[in-house]
Length: 185
Length: 283
Image 1 (cartoon, rainbow over the protein chains, first blue to last red):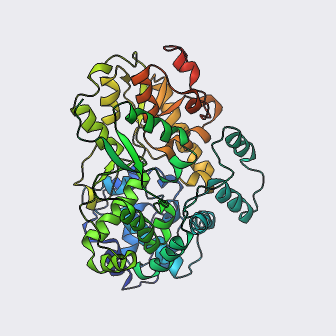
Image 2: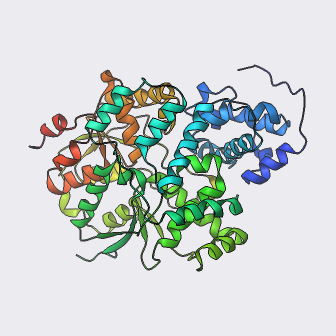
Image 3: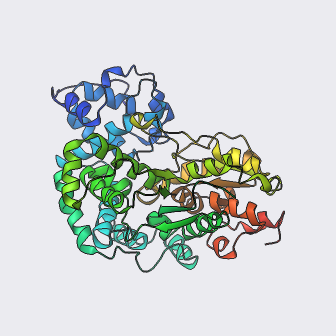
């Protein structure tokens, strides 16, 4: 983590877009650090949550969208609950992740994005999430064949992981939802 | 017995239908004992989960909406998973406040959206059951079992939803009413790491082990959680030296009701809960 925020280039529209999409007034942030102090993931982030807000205000779009912070945020809403000024920090993080995907920015935590995509693929196939298949496909795409192998076997033996998916019967309706989704984003 | 709900519509969600079947079975069993029947909504789909919410808001709304449109609006829709409850609640809020999106969704499903559909978290039902005096005869049943109540992030929510009822302390209150002994500890509201358990297991392990160690240091004999995702993460990411049994809230409630818990539920735990239970009950 750098001690100072350096803003070599600035995108004038960025802050306004993030505010509108997250429905949050970022000018309310007084950098009390409640969000960063409460965040269970802050110590792994390259930019602390309140600094993300400041960098958004300064128009530092590329740096923010390329950060690991937006992908290590799991959306647990702790920051949003802690904020004394009702800035919806978790919603800000959501917006930044979606922008990073839409604008093809180099993703700082490709494994996290890949996991989300495997979950969405599973929903597209079955209408529900099939955990065993999500895990297998994730491990394959990461070329990570051995970690958690013993855990997986233990979960199978305890029947925590089902071999067969739980499915929605009307698969066409699920596919139609993916079409509907395009009109709702 | 007179209680306002005898039949509820029910959304189990993917976790309770698969990895947390013991949560589902114990919940259904517990409510049956009070003559509350659950009717699963037909052919429900995934609520959208954190993954669609994280990267595809349109898909998150579409998936959650189908469930809202499938649910009959004559009775409240009971949701046991805090994640599903939040996702369906957010979709309901969007459909209520955004006329353009609501019109598009109504056009898709060919019927109007019922904005007064009541989404009921299991906590709300439990609070009502408690108020109606249904647990009066169960005092002392948990035999001073020392319990660390664990909520994870389930009580945190965005500012725009902060006028909805808050159930902080409900596990402690219920456990005390049933004769349990909740401990004071510092980790009841710390997130378990959710999906980082897959993509960044080291981060999830650090959080989980802090939580588990905190529970042991507080003198608790077990952890009780109301979230199936938390339950899974606490069990799978815990180091051998920090192992302490983790119960689903519904399992402990059934135990208080009957003085025993089904072996089928307990056998599905990765951290064996039977030795702790054997200190008070014959399992």
